[in-house]
Structure formats: C-alpha cells, structure tokens
Length: 200
Image (tube, rainbow, N blue to C red; front, side):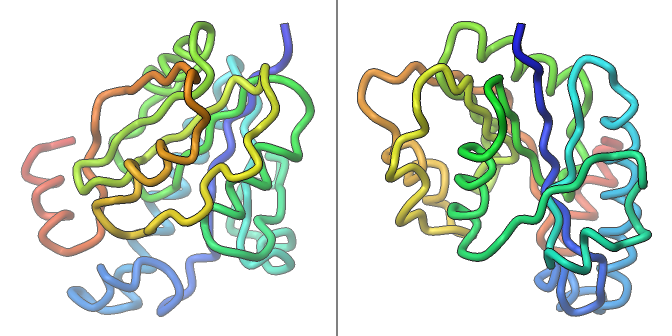
C-alpha cells in the first residue's frame, strides 16, 4: 500500500502575522501565543501516530525550514508562493504516490480518529473534505489515484463562507467526494470563548 501522508500547514507564530482576526480582539501577542500552543499540541499529537507520516508545510519558507519552534524529527516542506489554493495544490502535486490529507494547525477539534476517518474515506472516494462551520473547511484530502485537476482550487474565495463550495466546483464531474463532520474554526475571540465553553 502507498504511504499515507498528513500535511499540517503551519506559520511561524509571530505576533501580527498569525491569527490576526483573533489578534484584533485579544491582542496580536496573545493570539500568536494561542496559535503557538494550539499548533504545537496538534503537531505533537499527530506526529506520534504511526498510521501516517506527518509533514509540516511551513511558512515563510526559509524561516519555517530553519525554525526551532517545530519538532525537529518531523519532515518539513516549504509552502511556496501564491494564495492558499496554489500552495495546497502544490502539495498535492509534489508528493510521491499515495493519499494526502491537509489540515490547518489552528483547529482545536482535530483528533487522530478524525484523521483516520479521512484516510479511510479515501479508500472509496477521490477526495474528502472536513467542512468548517463558517463555510470553509478544516481538512481536504485526495486519494491521488487520478491526476490532480489543473484548475483545482483556482478562483476560490478564501476566508469567506463560499470557500468550500468554490473548491468543490473546481473538481471534475464524476469525482467521488466524502465529507466528515463539521468543526468550528477559531477566528475571533467569540469563537475561542464558544470553544472553551463547549469544553472541546
């Protein structure tokens, strides 16, 4: 069986460069600290799981490849240039054969069980998505038994409630798509407080 790869998109946790919407509510330094704690917890938890290889897609490229924030034992991949769709599409096209699942580092609800469900879904589907409650998505995966479509993820209205629908529209007709349960994104202080009240 080809290897499974879980790719976690991470940014250097620098104040004013990560979680800026959250930072407008609670301060840029505080939001960067929250992101660093959340991202490290996710990366360590997923990186220990032997059911897949965990790869960190880092940004900015040079700083991320040299960073001491992230566990040194995990493989790193530069995100490169372009919008989020161009960078994720580049990951799907660059890796050797086998299923690839991509997640962001800022979703507290991601668990190993959900990642395993995503890989299992790719056994019978071409792609899998984990919808976010705001109309985006927290996970995207591809079986990659077929070539990645040239227009995949182009023209997506990122950071809007159209992101998932726009992305689905870039897939060829006939592709089998699975969906996981939705998870909340943490973009504002209200999102964070709701997450904490829910005890997730």
